[in-house]
Image (cartoon, rainbow, N blue to C red; front, side):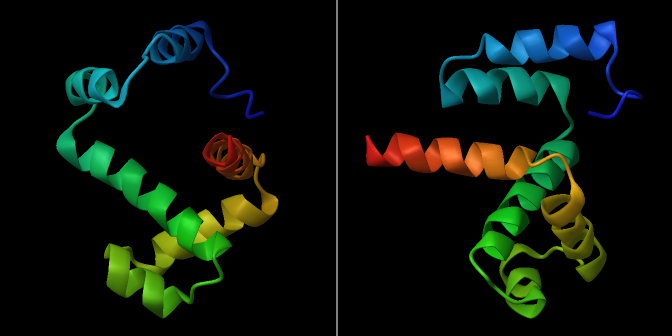
Length: 99
């Protein structure tokens, strides 16, 4: 974990996020917390990560998501050398789908 982001303020934000129960609640909260561009950037990175895990090429991903090759590369670096956060979420979603 990156010690630079581990602060009381970030802890409070994550505690707030963990109280959200539905996608509609997420929309309500994140529309207040984030700008439209911030939210779209986060969702774009998540989609890029999904597509990279599916084995899609940078060109396919760029065409489908509109992400730059720099963004795709940054997400790929997180997938390969990060904290496995994407993989944790992907696995949980897959487990949930199989239930």
